[in-house]
Length: 271
Image (cartoon, rainbow, N blue to C red; front, side):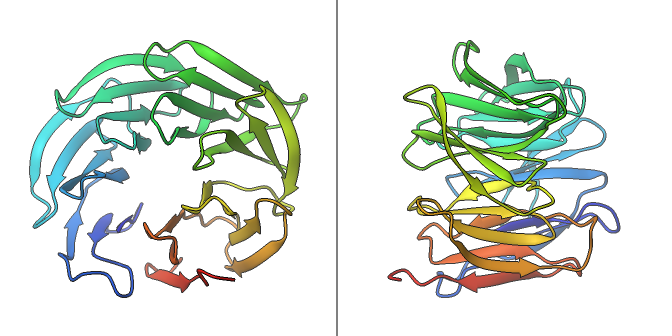
């Protein structure tokens, strides 16, 4: 599990994280101008991006940099494909760069004006982005061809996207309380869910796909089928944001607290 503190000391910390997990390495590394971090699915290291357009791959033992490159876009956000072979990098100007991890170079790019969130599908064949302009776009991840475009009414914003583990549904968070669900098989919106009244920033499904968590003033876990509010954790800071991550078995979730700690919650595997 990795956490990156933006601002202040810009500390990147990592460790096993989950109760009952096998003992593993923990560490801390200063990342000047640190913006983003992504763990490699293989568990062999992690990738960080900084305000100097730098992109580094680190080994997980001591955090030493194994490879470095300057990118064409400022790596404000990083998302890695489930197989670890490709990285998506977006800046604040609508540029999304696809990066080959093995060759350590850029291979292609797409445009997503005012991109606020992005995700690869579980099988890596699709890539989606949410735009503050009120649009969510889905591409073929290999060819860069647009396969779906979701348009909201004027004045609306899309904040994040998340693929369901079965790859058939794309969740789209909006500035309002609606959490859109788009059927990739049918190419249409299905029954939405209701999230936080002030809008939801980031979204992620648990590994089994029966819960959807969204963040705004803390985080909210919703039942995917019935929209029931399963759990709510709030923080008293309107300007603070963090992501939620699930453990690989789905029994725990973690959230970065405003004071610089990481809270871990247990989920009942057999409700």
